Amino acid sequence: MDVPLLALTRGTRSAAGPPDDAVAAENMRQLVQLRWIAVAGQLLTILFVDLVLGVPLPLLPMLGVVALLALANLVSALLLSRHRVTNVELLLALLFDVGSLTAQLSLSGGATNPFISLYLLQVVLGAILLATWSVWVLFAVTALCYAALATYGAPLPYPADLLPLVDGLDALGAWISFALNGILLTMFVTRISRNLRARDAYLADLRRQTAEEDGIVRMGLFASGAAHELGTPLASLAVILSDWRRIPKLAADPELAGEIDVMQAEVQRCKAIVSDILHSAGEPRGEAMESVGARAFLKEVVASWRQAHPTVPLDVALDGLDDAAVVAGPALRQAIGNLLDNAAEACPWSVGLIATRDADDLTISVVDEGAGFGEAQLATVGKPYHSSKGAGHGVGLFLASNVARRLGGRLEALNRAAGGAEVRLVLPLAASRGGAA
Picture 1 (cartoon, rainbow, N blue to C red):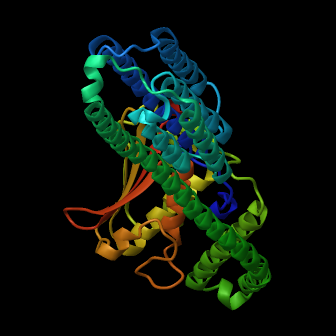
Picture 2 (cartoon, helix red, strand yellow):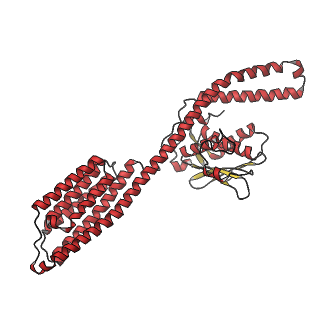
Picture 3 (cartoon, one colour):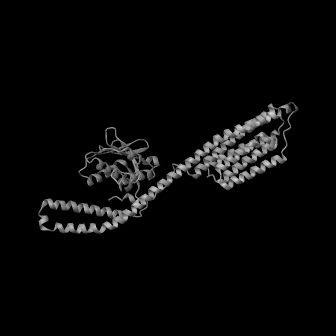
């Protein structure tokens, strides 16, 4: 008999969501993009001020700082794909940007340069991206740089013909600096906030999965305890039924003898279930999982279920599976059995199992002609203890959903247009998983 699903209580986390490392790497990419904008903006501004306005600037050192920014960006992009990004690396990247901005301002007017407000951009980004201590370090360095520019910086030597326009140029520069700060903060803070929200959503999903698996662990403990308690009464029933078979009056009645045979078979089945629960207690998750042919696997599941439910008609369609293979084992076998049990309870006169495949997935659909799902049930499919059958029910779909998720798939439920319900297990084919079981 199959190992009960309750043994599968520990699982690996899905890599589909954005963990902290991925979020930090994405934030560093945003800083790299911001630095490219700084490279282009500084280059254009330097050339415009020197060549168009005629304000003499130390072109060689200022263009050297721009080249250094571009080189740092290339190195950052290269390293970004090779290792995880830490808080210290983000701090160093922002400090480098503060240093390069300080170098450019010191060569172009010091604290009187209207673009000095770009310091605020670095501080705001640091407040969003960095740990608290790192933000204060960044702020302290920025404040010191501002003080140094105010103390030692020299105003730009404007040509005589531009002196009447200096106030207007400073006002225009201040407005451009304000607009640039606003645009860049809006663009990048929005993106960074989206990254952080995605990380929070991923962590919330992990917490939900952990809570669900804790529920499975508790059910496993209850099942193990119940199995111990059921062992004695089942053994007593087996002995009593054996004694009944030896009573001449009962043995001589074919109808009673047949019923005793059925009861003995059911008792043996219960004892086998109890033995499997006790055997599987503490069994590592994923044991006995292997890549198997989908058609042969489903035929085995169907044969086992039909043997246990001989009075329920089951229509099976496995056309088009060809050589499709899935990663399967006792857990998936029992999950499909649970779905068939639910369909048989809802509609004991018509149950169907349909399996189809596409390039990447195998879809196992269990259908019936019963009353279907209510709206509230569809909204809570896959959650424990949400069932129309009352308290204590609703575990089958919950366990099936967890098995599908662990295998990289999903569970779907819907009402059929012709009436009845359909529950689908969508599982990745083994070939699309690199052939690894």
